Image 1 (cartoon, rainbow, N blue to C red):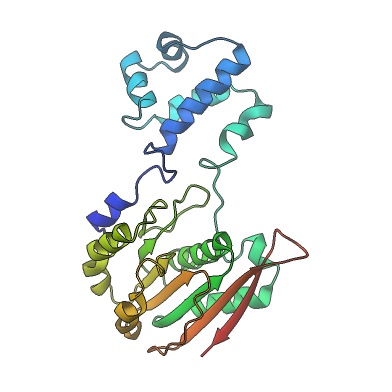
Image 2 (cartoon, rainbow, N blue to C red; image 1 turned 30 degrees about the vertical axis):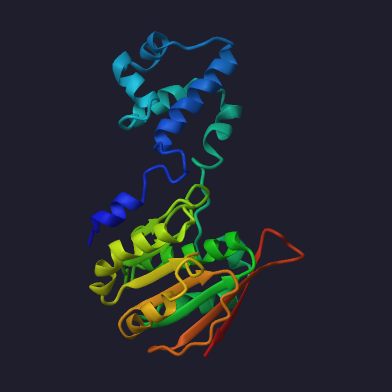
Length: 269
């Protein structure tokens, strides 16, 4: 099911600039080529290089429309191979793809087994908490992506994530608020998608980072746990709550000895 409010809220950029990543990329490629050739590329130059009309190129560089893949590839070919990673390998273009079997989690097979088991539950409540917001977001995103890609029983994910998906690949179905921190923004987004949430039996309902903006969130969503799997991710939740289908607590922390690893502790109440 596609919710228009969700489509509007999940802006195409995910990076806070208001521009699609493809428009940002064509600008970056132009700058890299100009730096390599030590000259300014006019729209006439770009037109000859890409076989695109100047008017079309002007629109793309102004953030209008979507640069074609062929145009981007033609410009990328002009960037020396040794420098192509600089164009594509870092956010907002080369984003991290959180998954349960990602190396940052897969080093602990017991923990990842618990995570898969938890995400097989079709109802109940799961808390994901930890002091580092980036790690909580990584794990919550990995859980959401897991259920959407589960070949045995893929499920819809619906909900709100406060963050901008500029450094990670987003979960299809979530509304991303692009770091708009004001409570009124969160409440408005919640009001807009609530009808879709209430009609999504069997879905995974996820809220990441909005608990502090909507203090009564738990009271609001508790009734959903009898027919949906609700995930609430945030820093330092420390909640004591009962729910239909049980309550799972996933605590996230960095590995002090190996910073590229995430430690996961699971508690079920």
